[in-house]
Length: 281
Image 1 (tube, rainbow, N blue to C red):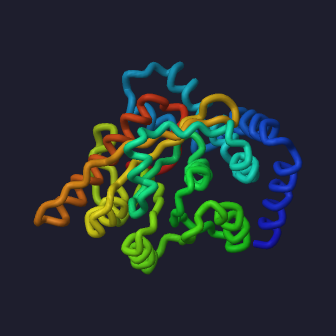
Image 2: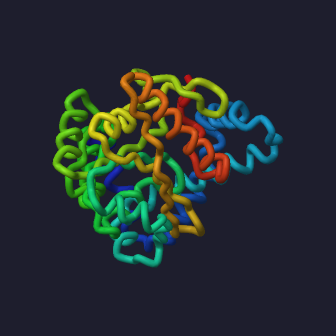
């Protein structure tokens, strides 16, 4: 455990010693060269082929290699979040003024997905003056988890909470007090609900829809688009929240609406989403 931790710290030290653009490019090149030979590449190929069968084999392979490069860049950029924050020219926030004004009023749920560099969501929120709480999946090694969390924490002034059964109550209290909550909601959730995603039922996280409906607050979908190297655009779209007498049906409908937006965004830029995880099982 400690050996793994110190190995991770060594990688972090090398990444931090390099300029942001260099670290991003080198890590992207390494991932693009190595990852296609690993087991997860096969899963990514199967997922992409099932989701977008209209693509030929050459196009799918190009998308997956670009995906690995983007993930490699994201890994290295995680050690430079402070640099991304300080250089405002790197992040363009393209959100309709009405939606931005709504968000600045406080009390909303932000749902994002693993596209572009999702860590930029927190950086962009801080640049915009938003105060948010975040949720993350804790890592198996507690020492590495503590180190990674310490890099993210400055961008979540209302707290950064690991997934757990009591986390929902903490976040509900934050919403009731006028705070904002950010969740990555595109991964498989075994205890979630199945909604259509690329034409197949996918076990999905109902938490954003549940929070927005129960606290009567807006639900906003956010995505990060990688433009060129370590430069990004952040875009947002309000998600319709269904509110009837049937809470379960409302949560399912809203979760489906959120994932319909996610699917549309992924289809626009398929190389920027993580195809290698077990989304459908």
